[in-house]
Image (cartoon, rainbow, N blue to C red; front, side, top):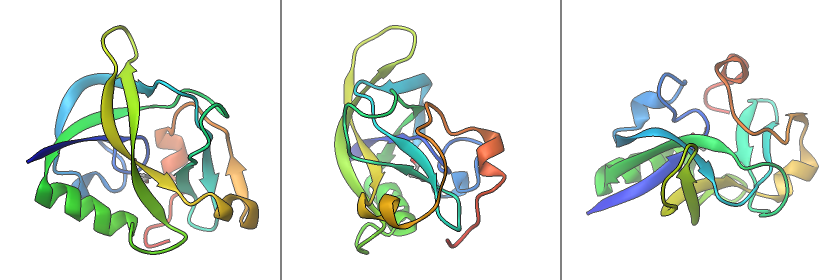
Length: 139
Ligand code: PCA
């Protein structure tokens, strides 16, 4: 079965965890239909999208279609079974130029960590290659 996943951080093409992303890209740039806060968080400088719709900005990223095994590999990276890490939820995104909104999975970071750790930047509208230079693997 194929799943849609919207990635906004290190799983984007050319970013530090892109090798874990085995999905097939849907061409173009997509943005979240709702605004959400996107921060750079903690010692590892993690891109951290928080499930607080209506705060922050519409966030830009990439949309992929991925099979069960590919999605499972991303779930392992994002530690979705560990409290305090990412959880995978459904949201709506749309092409930045024009086109129809679609439902997709996305990884939200745990909300309480934002209050407990250093917020280096944000809320952001996009996670850039420059932000990725501060990312620490295994954080
Ligand atoms: N990886 C996922 C969530 C944050 C991260 O670094 C992504 O790129 O969407």
